[in-house]
Image (cartoon, rainbow, N blue to C red; front, side, top):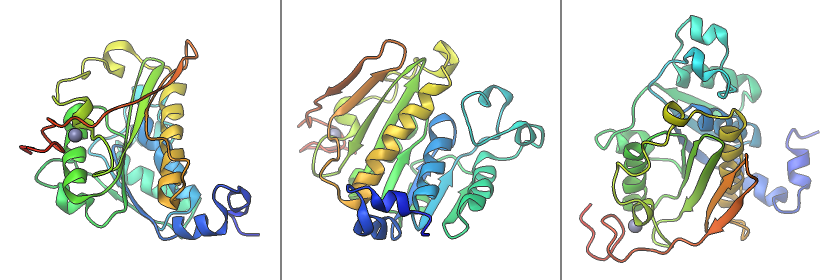
Length: 246
Ligand SMILES: [Zn+2]
């Protein structure tokens, strides 16, 4: 049996979808609560290549929600990008999983993001998301925004040239940065859940599915609220607007 048999059986993917996934090259920025679930989904779904970028080591306070890591990683102070790549190679040795211990910035974005078909957001701050956004819009590469804090989160698929970018929604890097796991805590199901929503859109995007959700999806696991909010392209956007300055 093909290991992806059950996925191929799903009509939304099929043999054609699986073949597209097998050609796909994905880069994940940030391997924390969102990223550890995103990384696992991408490898197990059968992409050709996954690059994992993260500058940090696993901390004891990460373990309740970052499901790829364990006490040994914390004890040995292993870099998350390296630990994640090693673990996921055991999940599917045919996927080219590369861990890079680095912090994404304007100056290294070209070197780290080039050559991939899709960028996944596993970060926890608007500044790095803007680095991803501005690079992706400039280079015409899709990316999937994800944010989580408390028991709620949101995701948005960003297709450069075909809709709004993140700066249409949040022009400034300071926006929403005060709402984090450090300030309001985190339910351990929330990052995994939000990452699964991102990963599902990644599957649709990589296989060209018409079911791709083009609205901001906002969920609250505590209250059960689940909304799709339309986001318009801002003509004055500093990144993708007519007179863009970035
Ligand atoms: Zn924009």
